[in-house]
Image (cartoon, rainbow, N blue to C red; front, side, top):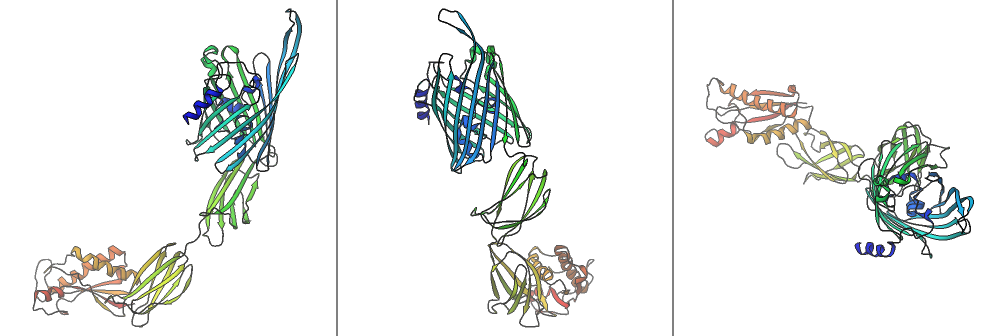
Length: 579
């Protein structure tokens, strides 16, 4: 990169300041670029790109116009116009400038006054910009120049070439070679610059300039959008003017822009120190602004392939109604009332999409809606006996985005549903053996994933020993290792919201008589009570569904002749007593 800059500097830079013809070529076009310190080659996003960097014209889509008046010192005035239109493979502009100076004194060779004359010069150009890729543009322009020098007139041709590269949503780079001609007297120029837009509502631009008749210099500027209608700008130029001789203030530029109803009003104030102050004002905009002050374009595309889709959209808000979008097409709305529009989008094979867009009083908004296909899911269920934890044969009925029935494998207890649309399903599991109580529950099935669920069926009037929920001698306190077992019991209660359960407490035969538990009956009831309270609080169960009862040592399940047997008898049981 440094080698390229050095090479261009060697070719274009010169110490012969002011030795070229057609000084009008050095005058920046447009109040906006000038207010930005004439640093515009990396931004070049409006119709004045025809002058600064013709590749920027590739971003324009509609018929547009630009007219500008420059008020200089010493009765010098410039009038500019640009007309732009979309064409085959890009965007075209026709542009012209007329510069005049009044009452120029004319003297003969003997220094005798001959009176005054009005002299003028002009430039006519044709420019074109097109996209080579989504992030790369190329442009060129051809100029015809004319100067009236009183005793004779001269004309010439010149060529402009420009390119612009978008690195990402925040950075743009641009470069242009302007006014190339076979005549060395033409003030050719090379500009390389960039634009940064990473800060909300703020643009920053910087150009490096290599003129053929002067030393290199830098230009910089910033633009801040106060709101969608008003912008303020400021910039600095280190050349091509002799800033030390003109005064430090001559390097600064400033201006503003106002947008409304498709029309832009731009102004720039540029001081030239000892020479005086200059003013530039311009009007620009779309030639179709009378037909509509704003435009909304809606496209619907596949989120992965970015291919257009057929879709139905329903609009609510400041625009209402249902509309159809044909594949490879878009839908446009003009002259909308400012405000929010809610967009509800439907396309076969895709989930419903809800989006919104805000419509300003003027300007174009392109809304791209990306839909992502519904990825089918897989569901695997396993059916077990709640007491023995062994597989049992059953039928699974499911309802949701799809519905149907499937029999499981009675040996493994499993069943698999493939290509299920994701969503919430209700499963009803009915065992082949009618002694089991059917179970119903809701399952959320995620898109493109395997979802698994175990179903534990209980028998009518079944008694389940909560093995592992044991107590110390003479105690009714739950041990931490009991929580895993109790949580499994709580899950069964959630899966069967209609069953009523007896929680039974038991002891070994050793009689107890303490302040807390005067008898084994009280101790067994207390043990049932702490289990009941844990389940109610942990799983937010209706207290009426759980009944606590104590049976002391009247129902042993193991011999009380050993410590191990008595530990098993100090237990809690879980028994279904009603549905």
